[in-house]
Length: 123
Image (tube, one colour):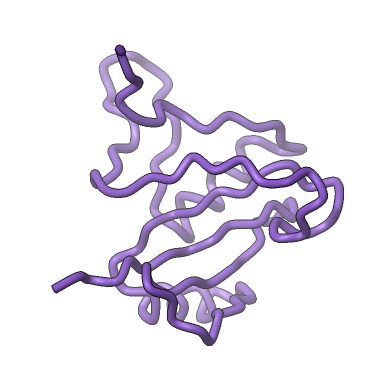
């Protein structure tokens, strides 16, 4: 069976796409979409990616009308949390460490949930 190689993009509606894209660049380091085909797009580090549909009545993403959430892998969750908090962004760190690592949650300026995940290093 032929399989997909990974996620090629995450596309979603926004009230102010340029401002929101700038927020993701400024706070999470995600490059803006290039305006030409010669400039390479944001290149993520390879690693684990989950594709996980949830029950339609989950509250894990936030408010009932929320249909999606993105999870970004980070190298150092504590450093990322400090960086975001110093920029005035509210961060909720999950106090529990899970078998697969640690998590924190932020919301972008339009209220979209963003989960940050520091993968547990396996020995």
